[in-house]
Length: 461
Image (cartoon, rainbow, N blue to C red):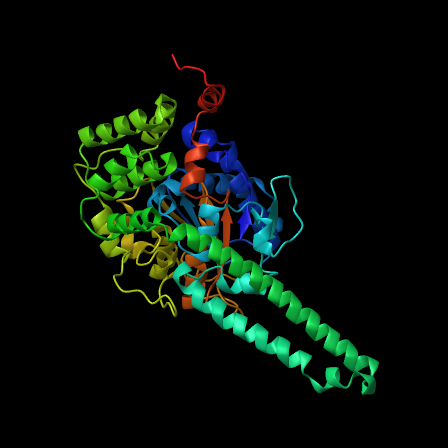
């Protein structure tokens, strides 16, 4: 996973139509081609994806042909997605272990800031009594469970605790330890190494056990479970959710939570303009006029608009198989387990692009915002150029697809694409402008002047 760490792209590019952020994306893809060879097939969906592809074509025309035409192909396909193509997924509450950490605690630079007690009394790093937990593949336990649905965490932790305890007791009771005076230095070195390894595993496991318990205390609250149920109702059925959204706004549960629900409802339901205006007025009445500019920005992006004439969600859900009623959390066979039934729309687009291209779903793509582009580069050693999702020309390796998100990617979508890699026997490289979720996205669209007015207590006139 590669990130440019440019969360300001929403304000600069999506709202102000500045091209500098998109130039950085295109330049980054060009750099990857310089290192790993030209990419034969590139497809994109969305206005900003179209701009990036045009910039790539221009950069290639201006570059030295010998630098790109090396004959070596290590990345077979590239899928570029504009975040506005799928605004449903980031508004949902993430349910994977990694995703729920980002939702409740927040992940920044592969670390989460938590209470020192969660890490077993680790040294505090700030006056607030907080410390950082590194969330990387160096922790093999985290690498194993980062994509788990949170409902499957408890059983896994119990199993691992028993395994570590058993190994620890076996080392302590080994004959080498019992008769230390008869052992060689090499044997003692092996014992110490095993003890250190077991102790390190115990510390990692204790951290994740405490962290999972902390998250469970937040998740088991009735309001949290109710919110998850309503979100799944929005994406999975046609039942009305307007009463719940109206009640949530009236109770002032959380501004971000209420607006995320409102955006979800606008994206998945056929609402008349009067109803959209009503809910926006309710938000302003409950939370204050300083949020009026944020609502205006959401309208400008097409996230708070009526779909009274035609709501494409039911067709998208059916054609792209976005919803399944029954899900196996312990041994998932599809990406629908990520959201307890819902498969991220963006991940489904990536899946179709890797399975022969978007030709079969062209009518479905037309329902999504922005243009669709599929281009092919003439590359030596790529006789099948122009065929998205083909097998790798090198039979010794798996085919490789580069997936680029313009506007941020959620950790839940990353988990879904990792699962796709397992299902398709394909390697995916995910490149993004930044990591996001519903709360982060809304914060990036707030007007700075409104934040200052809120902090200073100044009146808006």
